[in-house]
Length: 295
Image 1 (spheres, rainbow, N blue to C red):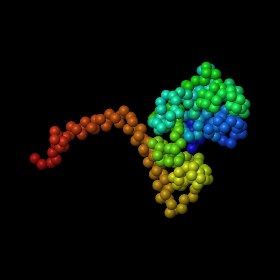
Image 2: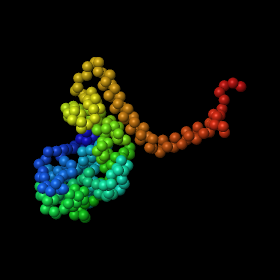
Image 3: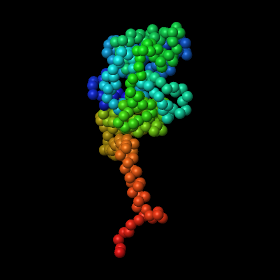
Image 4: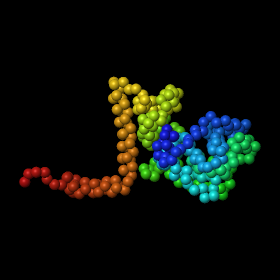
């Protein structure tokens, strides 16, 4: 899904490397071990790129609405690593006490030619006590303070937040409400609409979806939308189901557009004017003024 959303909006060719099943050492001290599967693999990026050029790192629980070329072309201005800065606590994080305003490394731009990282040595540094897990992963202590900057615009990492026309990347950070698992995410319709379009484009594997549903990793509704797959035969009796699935996609698009319209200044002005008009049509007693027909 993330790959499809990146490619759908990209103005340049994009090479995407899923950070999965890469050989990585495991720290001896359990306190230093990876919190998630990709905690340490990001440090292999410069090596995977042959220590050349630029690379963008992003987490997987995201949806892209902008042209990734805009992100990849942000100037380093002498820095080796760029991140975003998060100043405000996301509304859905109200119960999370671990949030601290500051640097967020879920989206990073790396100057691979100036990052001589060797992942095995870096992970080994944890057990050697050269730094803590938090200093390594969250503070990116491998890079000197004057060579790392939080200059990636925050709209490239909107945490549980979407603003039509501004959000370039939506980050679904709260695991229990991620839209591929539940319908309880306030911005879940955006992901479901994008998912349906990805299925229509043949970018989603039916086998992956069905296996994930069977394992309980994702909600059953994702399997139902597999009717939209371009190469899936649909018996005539099931044409109505495909039409219904397509209708869901269109409804999702409509909801998104209405949501964007309601947030616009023209909607607010129009709503205020119609409110005034309704009040003017009513008399002092609240009755509607004016007569219909008759002398």
